Length: 126
Ligand SMILES: *[C@@H]1O[C@H](CO)[C@@H](O)[C@H](O)[C@H]1NC(C)=O
Image (cartoon, rainbow, N blue to C red; front, side, top):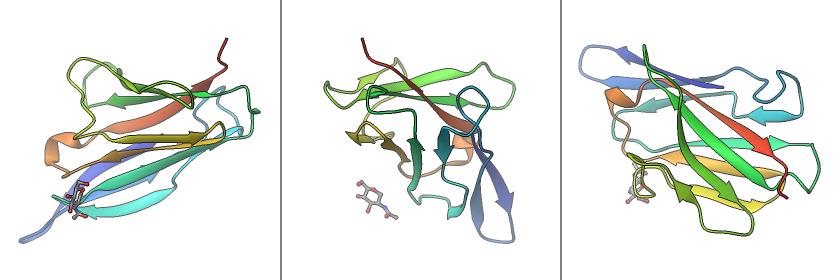
């Protein structure tokens, strides 16, 4: 999971990304970027990788904002266009899925309201 927390200092606003491991099955096969420091208006890229095999070609990205339900941002695959959910778009949340084992999600132009928990999940394609 990616946790983005905001840290205010005198004149700057930082966005803190923290990863807690275990995105699927609560165990090791899926990993995400461990930790990043970002400033407001920066872009943040989160990487996700897994070792579940080449049939796991679907990667989902989710956002959980404070006191809100988890929302799916996008479904990415190696073989079809990304499918964005309502309220999310590729300009703000560009994603990459170049091979079965890896993928990334970028948040462009970070804002305080982007603060939340982000995580990925993978699934096998039919
Ligand atoms: C963030 O990404 C956008 C779109 O790709 C780019 O135009 C912009 O320069 C990037 N900003 C930073 C701070 O890297």
